[in-house]
Structure formats: structure tokens, C-alpha cells
Image (cartoon, rainbow, N blue to C red; front, side, top):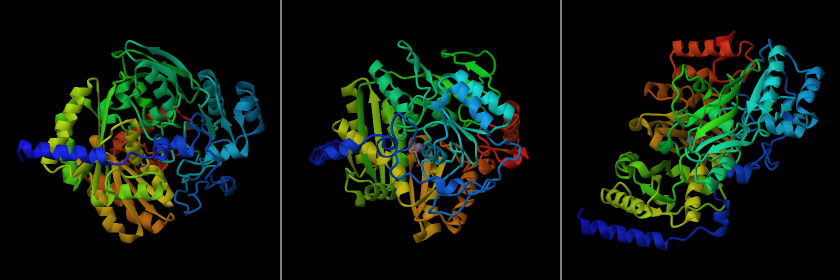
Length: 552
Ligand SMILES: O=C(O)CC[C@@H](O)C(=O)O
Ligand SMILES: [Zn+2]
């Protein structure tokens, strides 16, 4: 296609953009972080009462097999309580009161109900105690006591996880760092932020933005999730394609071990090769090796020129080619490359009030969000336009719209970030978070759709730029027959294609027994040895991450 045709295309495209309706003020107001706005209070770990299940329905189900799926489903995970653990008694509670004060030792049923259930209301524990320490020393005293008494604990951040990692399985004592939310320091030359583990991600982002920096991490749950929890799960999110993993951006950690030792690894140096870099053991260990109490993180400068395009593609091959083209053409300014299929789009549009597609949604099979962030508005715009133009000429993009202002940007992100929220509205949702080679990326979605037919809604979306697919399968109720058609098929398929069964959500309770699909027996054994060395009584987040059978 010649230059003339190409510029005609772009001109038509621009007209098309300008002709599109701007989202209404209602839509604008609901854009942003849904976990914050619709489900959770931003600076508090307690669930807003609307839609919260009454956990007391579950609490007395019996001590031996306490985990039940929520009321629209049957029990799916029955793990016996480890008989080596003690039961909480009145002396334990009085001791906790002496170190934390009356208010921060919570036995109130409503508050425990919220802390005992996960965000999807899929995993349900029966803890009788929630502790709210205010300092690393208090965390240390709690753990020292729990370890000597063999009381199991579950570290909990914003409780926004998707694999049952942050809620008790039985009666584990819940330790939440919500009161440890102080910013310790910011090195304004290098952008190195030091803060406590209970800081809410969105609060950190707002603080940094005022100082001319941004968090290298951004996710839909930002309004509720805590940085300590993000680190413990090694959360990926929307900026990963640009700023990489927390293994790269975390410079130091303070961690409290199971026996109460405070491990000071809170370095603020970019380079430090003195011995083993132990902080990496705790990034992604899901609270099973220690509790992250302080964090030192490298934060990139805030760049003022940001563009966001919402694009439609006819098939998945075009999405793949578009990614390659975006990496080539946009290089250093590419800051997000997110993908969703038309089924994801339909899900959001039919379940979230006030969300509208900026494109005629029924016409296209796939949608891509491409974001650029740079420091030169003209240069960045020119680059993006050249990329869009070439991709249109090549037929990779069928249609598209570039956000004209911050409100439009938010409304585009709202669609992508709203998929999770919409998925839980259907009823029961089976979530798979897979890393896959790009040529295999969408195959499993199509296979599951064929396999399940009318019995389930199957959607595929995720961080295409990082090779991370979110496969969500929804039914009105949890159903063991459906589950049997999904698992182990999805895990076997992923393993066969050399993927990972957990790209960014962790293993938690959901996939503790599935680790062998992604890790060799020798690797798992070394993990078990490390766990036993750091937590010999196995009190930290039991039943999660590693198969229980490894400890019998
Ligand atoms: O709900 C999910 O499956 C994915 C959640 C999150 O990682 C996302 O990328 O939206
Ligand atoms: Zn994700």
C-alpha cells in the first residue's frame, strides 16, 4: 500500500477518533481501580459490607476439613489440619494484648468474617484471631510467640489474591500489616523509596507522582493491595513489559522470620554482590518463608507524555505480529501491551454498569491496548502514529481509537482492568494464570472453549507483552464435573508447551499440589529443604505453595 493510501487511512482514522463519543461523566467517575472503588475501602483491609458473605455460615463447619468453596459451589479442597499445630488459648490472646494493645487484637466476628474469606469468596478459613502489628518489633514478638507455641499464622496484605494464598485454611492466626503503612524515605536523585510493607500500592503511587516518580508496578487491585503482599506474590501487572519483575526493582527488604528474627536486608544500592542475594528468596515465596515488613524499591521517573490506543484485530496472528511491530517501532516508549478477546469484552460490557466499548464491540475478535510513556510529546506521538499507520496498512489493525485525554484513557483501562471483576459476577470462576510461548498463547483458550461447549463461558486476556495469559472459565455454580474437564488438562497442556502454571498470581492454596507441572522434583525438594530450614515448625502460611505431602 502506497504512502497516499496510508495517509488517507490515517486521516479517516483520525476523523473516526474525533467522531467517537467521550465517556459520560458517570463512566469517568467509575474508571480506575475497581477493587478500591467497587469492592474495598482504599486504606483499610476490611471488606465493604455490600456483597460480603456471612462467614459465620462457614465458621463452624468442623475443624478437620474447614475449607469450603463458597455457597454456590461444592467443597473442592479438603486439606486436613496439621495436627502438630496448637490451638489458640486465652493465654495467647492475653499475651498478644500485652504486646499490641487491646484494639489491635481483633476477635470481632464481622472483622474476622472479612479476613477469613478471599476476594472471590472462593476460599474460606475459620480463624478466630486477627492481629494488627504497628512495627517490625511487634511482628517479631508475634512470630516468636507463635513459633514457640506452634501456632500457625497466615500473613495477609490487602487480601486481593486469586489463588487462596492470603486467607487461613483452618484456624491460622491472621497477621495483617495494614497499620504498618509509613513511608520511611525517598532518595529524590535515584528514585529509591523505602517504606513499610503495609503501604497500599495506590497510596505509594500517589505519593511518588507528587515527587516526580512512579511505582514500577501497577495492577487492578492497587486500591487495596499492600506492597508487602505484592512482593510476597511477586506481582506482575500492567507495567511489567516496561519495568520488569520485582526481582529487578526491589533493592532491599526487611523480613521477619518464623522464629521472630528480624532480617535486615534493606539495602538501597543498585549494585551489591556481597554473598547470596537472599532477598530474592522472599520475593514470590507467598509469606511461606517470612513476613515482609519493609521494602526498598527503585522507582522510575514520572514521564509526562503518555498515549493510549485501543485497537481491534481480526485474529490472534495479527495480535502477535502487532506485538513484534510495537516492540520494534515503539521500543523504549512502549509501556503496556495488553490483550483481550471479544469474549472478555462482552463479559465486561454485560456485567459492569456504565462501561462502554470505544469501538463497535460485536465486530472484532481481539482487542489490544498499547500504551506509550515518554518525555517528548511530539516525538512520542509521531512514533505512535507511524506505528499505527504501518500496522493499519499491513492489515494488523482493523480499527482503533487513541485516547484524547486522561478520562478517555481511564475508560479504556477500565475495560481491561474490569475483566476480573466482571468474571466473579457470573457465579463461579476458575482462574488460570499461565505463562506461555507466544506461538501457543491463545491455543488453550480455543481448546477449552471446544472442550466445554455451552457448559461454560471461556475468556482469554492478559499481558501479551509478557507472554502471560489469563484464562478465566465461568459457570453459574462450582461443579466438580466441569472442574474435572478443566484440570488437570490445563496444567498438562501448559507443561507440555513448556509454560508456567503460575505467571504472576502465585500458587497459594489453589496450586500448591500442582507445582510439579512447572518445576522438577529436585527443584521442589530444594524448596522444601529451604522451607524446613527457615520455618522448621511450618507455621508460616501452611498448606500453601508446596504440596503438603512433602512435609509428612
Ligand atoms: O482475574 C484474573 O484472572 C487476572 C487478574 C489480573 O492479574 C489482571 O491482569 O487483570
Ligand atoms: Zn494479570
